[in-house]
Length: 372
Image 1 (cartoon, rainbow, N blue to C red):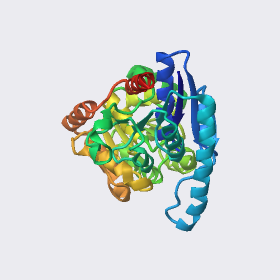
Image 2: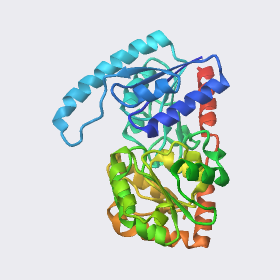
Image 3: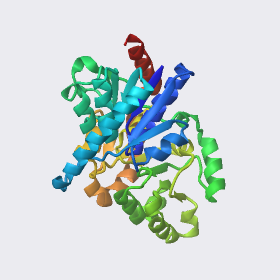
């Protein structure tokens, strides 16, 4: 079997795509997989690193701020569709999988026009523009949230959840303490509540600013902090770290990137995070109480909708970006002091987990390919 997978632009699209590819390889070791992405976007590096071939399209997203530039966007989209026609003719895919992002729009539209069965994977609780554009071309749409009938035909929807990183459940608290204390020369302990801050791999300016301003207060309230800043915010975070006493600094891990995320999660009693689909799926799988700070700078405010899907079920706490500097640190201190609240958040978010999502989606892809 040959499988075409398309999507990208952000890690939130790339990771599910690679996870589905890995699951397809497990089910069918001899299958061929080809990715289609957007030129100059991160998938052109990340996908080959994961061991897969990728072809780039000269495609870009719509410019909502400067509509006159969209003539070039439409021209490039048409060029991309022509390129995909050649890819489909040469590769002969038995099925195509779209995970969102504008490369996926061109790839899946052409695949459907050429008779290739299409499966879409929608990560968010508020469907993206690309997948809404493609909904009539797909045979099946795999979703992570209930209530997606408002975006897609109900008879095409299958609730599968989002694929998450395979190793996240493998860390233990004892291993995490040993790793962080040795690697960062700190003195974290098993009996102190741990706050984990992850603003995404690029970092989140508002979250970082809020934590920097409140770092002394967090530590003085008995918390230990594991703080991933993102590369562009690391220098400012170090300035805040240098204002701590030596004793206070022993309770803070501050880094631009956490390479052992499974250990960070294992240690965390509460997580502060953006509300991207992949992050929320990880929190659900691990049952981690969370304060979600949706990014206001995303298409159709979809992170807010992701967060509210959990908040309505008392599975997470929402702090809006504009309120974060005033409320975020105090909310974290308050929640970590409230054991019944932590237990409620843990139980409710764990109940929303969808296990083994990548394999479940891959089985549907194989089933569809064989039917056609």
